[in-house]
Image (cartoon, rainbow, N blue to C red):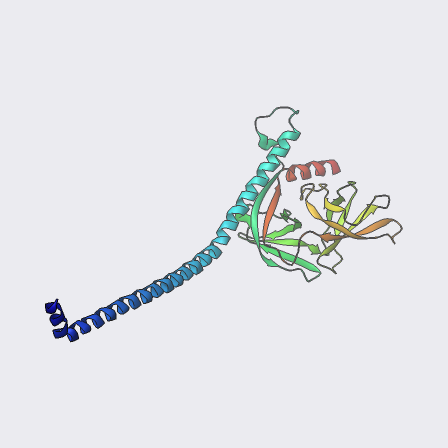
Length: 275
């Protein structure tokens, strides 16, 4: 015991120094771990933020590709639906070798690259042309309804006469009663077109749906147009119906081009009858 006391007394300064060293080292390691943890957390936060930004940017640029895929799929489904509808209608008819004989319309997708809507005679430009099978007098629609008719084509592009054109004259009807007339535009409001030549005895209510009548070689029957917003009954012969369009004609993007496969046959038949 005396030897231990002697040892402690003799080396007390050295032992005290070593104790301080141990405490200092412990504090240093603890501090380093704290800073290391903070550094790792900060680095992870920064890296995670960068990955998130990169992911968002990647998702943004992939939207166009995804949208193109969806548009192509919608086009394929429209064509398939056209075939299915026709096949059901003809289920009791004479059997033929191919369903394509009965199919009347095909659909292809395009995108509007220029759009005028504030003039009296408005046109649009789409990014598909003759090399894509686009011809004059083909219907242009989207998921909300009609847009116009192609009136001029080049190799890669086509011009579309908008329904917001004072020369536009389309066949349209009241969905509930099937009364049909002519759809025109008075050049005033780009959200509203006019349906004329509807007989006065037709029952018309605000909110009634207006759609294509199918009595032309351009638009298929039953394509949406808009709803009745007001009726002018001042005319003694006919009603003038204001139709609020389903489409926002100032904000158009992807569209479908509709081809009538029987168009030439119908025209040739009509020409023979008129001769």
